[in-house]
Length: 159
Length: 62
Image (tube, rainbow over all chains, first blue to last red; front, side, top):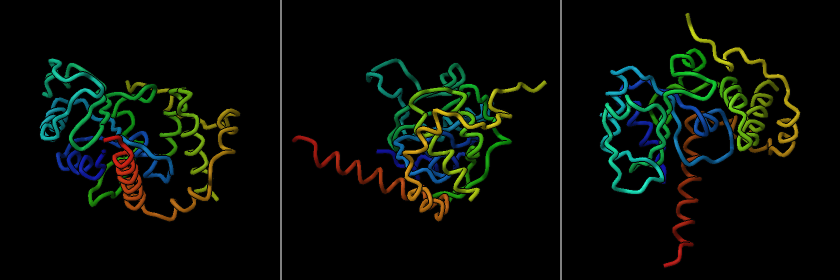
């Protein structure tokens, strides 16, 4: 089971640069839809990768859905060589995205993030408007419900 | 020069497909959530996920 508080505290406590996107970001903005993982876009600087790797190591990150025993090592070389990782950890499922489809990198999205207080910590979250835009741009049929809900939230906010 | 991304300056014109999906959204739930702080919203999500997890464990065959 995903422990959102634990995952976010570990990420924020590391001082790493990341922003919430996906279902948890939608929930932050008021979506009622349940999500079972944490999606974040993270900065790909070597320093930031080192912070993330060190902070997440105690949670034993592993490739989600992959059989045990693969030659997967959670270290800076692995993260630096990859980009987007769908992980399972002892605190739940975590998607680490170096780049969002048609949305860009952490640095590209940074100006469209806002600071939010959750679980006693402060972290960045993609704005509602950019979240809608990113999901629209991705063009995945499975996102249509979520986009409709996010746009309804935007309308309700304007009421 | 900074890269331009397709979503950076997206004008969110109504999409007829999304508009169709929007009709099924329960806005009473959204209005209740919008009364909460982001922290309260995530704690509510955590409570729900914990409940579902417990339910799945309870219904799992021995």
